[in-house]
Length: 273
Image (cartoon, rainbow, N blue to C red; front, side, top):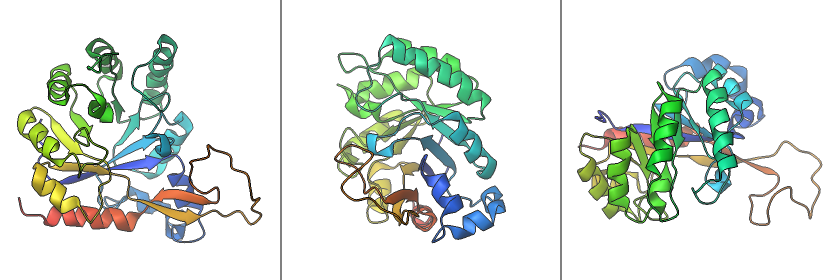
C-alpha cells in the first residue's frame, strides 16, 4: 500500500456541517454557495473526511442522517468512525451487535470507508473481531484508528494490522500527541514500508507539521483543524450546561476551519522529500 503524495485526512464532527451551512459569520459563503462543496478543494485540499460524533471523547459513530447530509455537499471520500462510546476499545457483546447493525446502515447511507479498532483485555489487537468487521465493511477500505496507541506492543500491533488487511493506520506513536510520539512514528513508518500507510495524527498544527512529516517520513497526515465560532443563541442561560463538567463552553461551536486546512495542505506539499 503505497502513499504516493503528502495528503490530508480531516476529522469532521457532527456539529461542523451545521455550523458551515447555517452560520451567519465566517462560514456564510458555504451556506450561500453549496456548489462549493462539489469542488476539488471543498475542504481546503483535504483528500478524505473522517466523520464522527463527540470529538471531545475522541470520536464516536455518527448518525446515518449526518452521513447522508454530509454526502450531499462533500464530494471527497467520507470515512465513518465505528465506535459506540468513548473510553477503551474493549467492547461488550451488545456493543458489538450495535456496531454490526451500524455498518449495514452506514454502508447503505453512502459511507466510502470505515475507521475502527478493537483490543483484547491484555492490550493486544483483537484480530478475530477486527477480521469479522473487515469482512462486514467489504468492499470498502478500512483504517485502524488510534486504538493502536493503547496497545501493549505497538510495533507488533502494527504487524497485526498489516496482516489483517487494513489500508491505513492512524497513530500518535503511542503518545498523547504525534509530536511527542514522533520517534515511534518514524519506527512505524520504516517498519511498515509499502505494506500500509502510517498516518500521524494527534495535535498536528501548522507549527509542528513540518517537523512531524520530516521526522517520520509519513506521506499522509490527519487532523481536525478545529476553530470555535459563537453560538447563534440570543438568550443564553447561565450556570447550566448540557454536558459534563469538563466540556467546551455551551455557547461556542467547534468547527473545521477551511483556512487552517488550506494552510496545512500547502505546508505539507511544500516540504521537500
